[in-house]
Length: 303
Image (cartoon, rainbow, N blue to C red; front, side):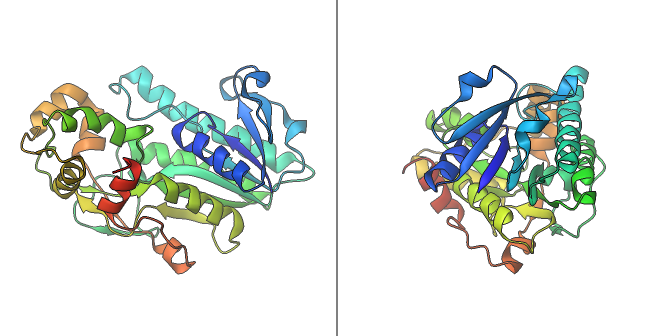
């Protein structure tokens, strides 16, 4: 396959490009910087700049699929008004520019796999959430609705669009898990707030597997929950990570301290939670490489 990838310098994007190349696929990276900086065997680099509405359209003709992962990081820094603007605009503008460009091509890709997040459901307590569940009403929910809606031009042009709603990705290379490691290794890890909030997680290898499954399986379109089958409460996640690292987990971080340190971002990402299950993946026969939490953590941390 010839596959377009945005966000190819991020944690998921880097791993996806490596995986696709290892399987003999050709990859075209959409990049903001000088194209030659990103050239590698089996890849081509094409410039785009969503903030300026610029994209090298003609270089995207004749690809089989596209994977859209680009967007301002959500879990880094407090959500100031400026940060929230970047989060929203980077997703809506970039997605719409890509979708409209793909829709205008003479030789369109058959499929667009576009990232979204389980944050679309908002903080829902113990409610079991599938792709049919209603969205939430908080900031992240609104961002995700706009993010997914921006893929509509591609769908209307006949491109099969899959919106992968990604949970907490477990990887030792970056993301939430890497941020947790230092305090846990120092014996300062513990549950956040009450510890009762659900964490819908997925191993990085399974994110890549789901993306490739979505590229290939014609039955998938629209929202697809990209999470492992067994979401866990924060307290359970904390204990599992402590076991894997061989460290105690007896220093909880009270909710007021989370709010003080992280503001609205901490309220949404650390104290809020979603109990999400991968209904569409299970219906289409996707087999998880790491369906249980401790196994996924040991794989991610090479334990």
